[in-house]
Length: 251
Length: 303
Image (cartoon, rainbow over all chains, first blue to last red; front, side, top):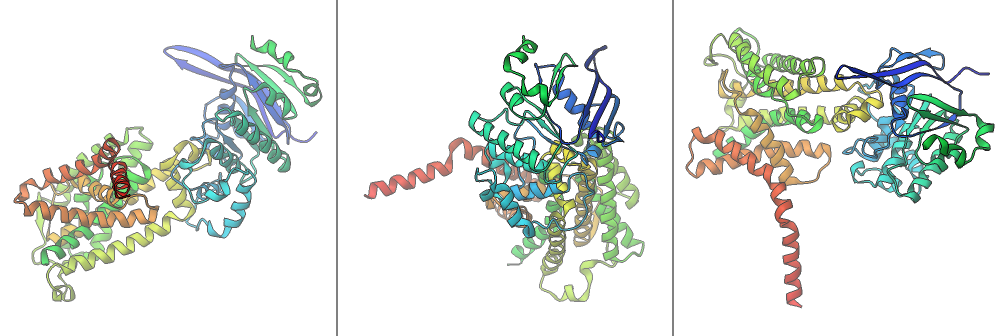
């Protein structure tokens, strides 16, 4: 077996509030193989977002986290950006609102790099950016020079996704990235997400509340409950998994 | 005529302050009070240096450097000390009041019989006030070109993104604390430079000359925005320069109405308050909408 893309060993997150400490992620052990596309299910407060924040370095966690064998536990969120890209649930969070679509994309091409005094080379890439944005079929390619705050939610999330894969990340974190969209737009973006992950052979974790999406997409499914890993289905098990089998986790 | 040239010259010199403030107030999106200290700091450093025999142009570079240090002090309090940025600026501004007195050795210092950038034979040969127009234009062109170039680099884009969406910037690996410190340093460096230039133009430095300068800088930015509307970033820099000149004309008109120099600060604040309320008032009374509707109805009446 090849080296794990990402591995979590005994990862716990404890928050302290008013002299009380609460563990919201307990001794999490998770090994993610290269090109795994794992869907993450769980009730509110199960620890899904905490898991993402721990991996991305936004929360301090105990235990050990490695990316491709490299121990990143001591790195902060900004330093981990070299390995991880993330699409947020809120369309406003993933893009710089007053900067244009093209500017946002070029910004994301340098994810995790030192920002230097070299020109951004936006014009030289215009044709390529147009082509990349056209694949969504939602008019984004016509809006390359528009500030992103003028875009629709669906356009903004498409852009966030495209930004996240501008530079292939070691791990793509999708944090309910279609939840804020209408069913039609959501289904469209989900299908494209799947296509991009497969084409670029990315490793991804996706939180979702839509059980059908969790079953339809990805090659592995995990269920979190009360800060623990409740279930972990591999590709073969996941194929035979049905909606009803998952409902027991949500009563 | 000469009064108009004078207003233009003042507007151009003060526009450097407006551009500096634009970097923090509009790009980084927070109010930086440091300018009320870094402006007189630049003035004091420049004048004190000249009286100690430093070349007037070199003294302006010192003023720029001193302003940058003031910006760094605010930046470190804000990013490392976690002091709210408004308070951090006020702390540095207050501290600088003492520092400025030490630099100057007294409350004010004249450049009488001292070398001065505006005191050379060529500038002296021009009609009155053309010297400040020429120096102001030259300085602001160099500054604007450098800034427009910088904002199009990868570092400049990361700087803009930091002010626009900090969480996103961090998720792209942008060191947002570094960007904020850099922005505060460049901004206050420019403000210090403006202070030095204006002190040489006035012929003296005064530790009290920082009072209210933030209002003057904001007025330039906001008049530019209200008058010129939706613009690209580069155009907004130019609009701020024009706003700074327009502000001087507004003052001229107000002074022409019979108000005295004593009233200048009050008038400055009132002008800025009115400009700040324009968008709100605009949204409330839907002036443009009403105007268009009025025009439309007129057309209908004709038919």
